[in-house]
Picture 1 (cartoon, one colour):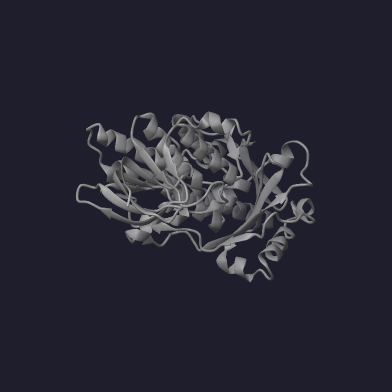
Picture 2 (tube, rainbow, N blue to C red):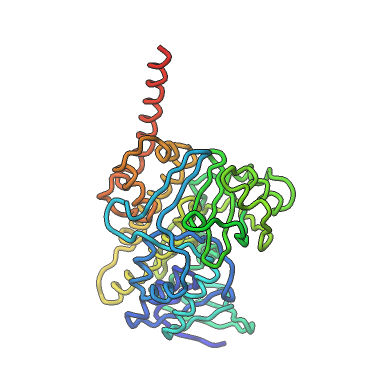
Length: 419
């Protein structure tokens, strides 16, 4: 058995793991990354939001991503019948990036991992974590099985679990908890977008609302392919007949906006179904470890928050470990858990109010309130820790209250008309 010593063991080589590994390596910390899969590998989460650009830049990964010429995302469009609401990230409240990317994640994650390896970081693919034992001082012994089938040990001072849906530490430490988000499921695939319109229309990311709780995503890539999928209550997704391909085509056919563009287009792979995808944990950190990204919380794909929380938590984990290593006191509950939970709770409010219909009421209300739209746009861009933004600070009530006022105004207008 091979025994290896490292400062930080990172489980998973997705965006969270790569950001954390790169940042720590840049600060002369010895890092070991283990990844169960062989890259490139398929994964969902293809729409990014601007906040992630801060993390890629700070970790020294931005230039390698720019070189790939992924499709740039400058905002997002929401469609409801003949109503359209479009957000432009350059017209948001506060500072921050005004663009990001929409990406085939296999290529995107592979680019990150290659850059991590190029930096000289020890990244081991096809290496599965079998068990983790923590010592009283927070150090750990992790048992892994490599691609040759050999069982080895990794001794680390700290673990950052960026294992995503693999949820390695939540499984081993029994930290799983039910999510507060309603049970939804999704069905999705990629197509060769042969009917893609020229210009901006062809590459604009859009969300087409078919019913209040059922929506279609369309995410065009720079390689000519487009990701298309449906999200809705699990009961709705499971009520669709036939194969996954037949079910997804049935939903696409319900879209007045996209029916013609995709009606004769074949899927590049049999559509995947993910049921009841939302998840949570009882705690985000403990002595000697943090949980990041989808290994901790996953809300819903409607606002593309997944990669943002992954990179935010990966970067914060790395910074706090470095701070502690340098002899400074770290209050992990406050500086990590409370901080991350605040952003998660802001986005959770927006997800919940999306499915109640209240947020959709704000999106499609006319005339638009430019101040409200800018503040909501900043949230959609991922700047959910900026308490100068009232739609962040007062997230628990502001959407519901404004939707109520709009509906009351409509009622009063109708009553005046009737009288």
